[in-house]
Image (cartoon, rainbow, N blue to C red; front, side, top):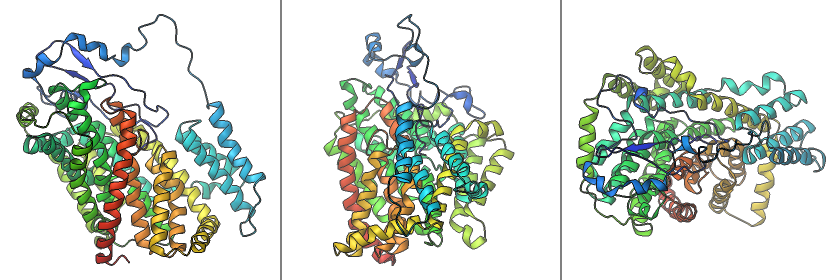
Length: 568
């Protein structure tokens, strides 16, 4: 999920080989450390009731037959994170305190220019124009990061209250938003998957069943994520806590090491495939990513009500998403091919790992049962009168009572509380902009421009969706993008004559698909890029290629499917 940045879940991972007495540390790669950290346990102590033989999560498989492929000379390619400052005795310069001066000045100036230098349209009230200037300054800070996102959002909220643009109650009204609390609880569910090892076990089974060839291995990892996704609503947690450790271990067993030419043997392909497939896995289910839930809430605030949201979201996404999930591994296999085509040892290694893990633990069974209950309530909750957030609260309560999670686990999930703060602030500001008429004014301006070109609503849909997607090159968060632009773009769609539910869902699906276009476009992007297997040019190139392919499939197959479902 899709926090603004990560202290990488993967860069500190080491791989200890049972047949050798040394450890390999993959090359540290800088990852935008100004994002909030998604704290996930990646050590055996984080599991409940661990087996005495349970390995580190990074030691996903043991490779006795491959020890000859690694030698101590390869250590020069890697530098352990904890030793990064040991090469020099000179003291490091003190870290910069407070806001970064240049991004701070630019972000503030954007708001001041809009407020005092740009003429106010006659249709807009002074209060609305002042709030728009504060909101634009806040959004600029999300892109330029003068402070961590939560801190910068709080400054924006404080400014709105101090200038009497918003009352205290209006400024903090979104903190009681059900969807935001559902997002917070989803972080705790993700921690439960990692802590119990359940996600790791599920993925390992798919490797055992489908891993005889590299292509089969990629499909096994892809569809294991599809299975986990609806109950683990964080692509970042799935990437760093489950799939990247498995991919690394499989790659190292084949002599494919990060940071050097052998990465192309296996690891680069598997990482790229998992990275590009994650967007469609998240788009398939409403509860597979936090931004999906936020989209539904913002749509409701604009009067677009999606009935039975979990079922409607899944039905509309099912055909195009599944086609993309089937096509993506094959396309990358042709355009970004691995040097190793067959992996006959992978199933045996997976079976050995499962044997080492031992039988399914009590806590894993509790996790399975709780998530089945939560997903069932998300699907049928409307008919039972149980809101999605309440269903999540029931699930979390069960995990706390039965000891799968404890309250310290929740308190240590800093990214959840950070998300609560900045999401609520952005959602609150966006809601007040709608109430004050800014969103309506902006959408009318865009709609009039589109009408001047005599565009039909399907053409307007295509243009607005493309613009919404390409703007993400300026963002470092999917959820931040939604909070900043989703309401405005949905209003533009409606003003252009696009059916409301279709526009709301299409923007939601698009939000997941642009999470793999750059190395900073999402939380999982930071995780996979930090692994060291894929280079920056490859990320941009394959991100654009898959954008085109996804657009063709979602635009073609999706249009047919949505017509069949009666969405337009």
